[in-house]
Image 1 (cartoon, helix red, strand yellow):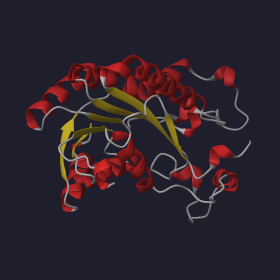
Image 2 (cartoon, rainbow, N blue to C red):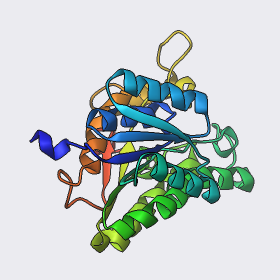
Image 3 (tube, helix red, strand yellow):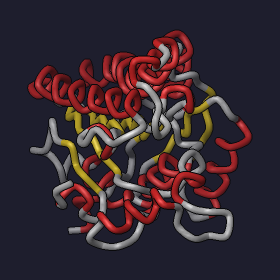
Length: 269
């Protein structure tokens, strides 16, 4: 069975691998034998992740790239090919939200700024899936082999209150995933998505926890709605990402949105 999840000899690019969730997925791919390339704008954070992977016995390198700039992505792809080989596993973990694209309690949806909406869409859809899929998907299709994993969100499945632009953008990521899965199904490239539930990270820590470590009102509501009665831990995404990345273990899996949420989505709101 272990051979099903052996990624030895594979080159995996993790865009957004400098973040908490992307970094944890990079760790898992490296532990499964892949050579992992961390792509992002922060060399300091990227190199820190590379060092952690290498300290654990894995193989990794950092490559600077801007997920919202197609020329930057092309340059990064070509540099990776020269330095390590052809990428056959792509993790699109770039994304995020903006305060001005979020609706505080009592705010008016009709006053939501278009510019803020567009920036959240660009970050999560264009940079978080579209452009990387175009750039890294092209050689995968030419080679007839590849696994692309887009990181969507629970918010893309359920229109969670407040983060309206983020929710809509992640729903679009799921839709694009399904489109590309159909487009490339006979070309040897599988395209799937992972929708994490609530995982504490830098961008949502203040939403979930008070300064004393207790739950905020929102954090308590989420825990109350989650059958496992806790938040996820970043490493718990590792098994899912390795499974989807493996051409042996997930050879007939494409166009799927795999939910990792402690049961949150199984409870009727």
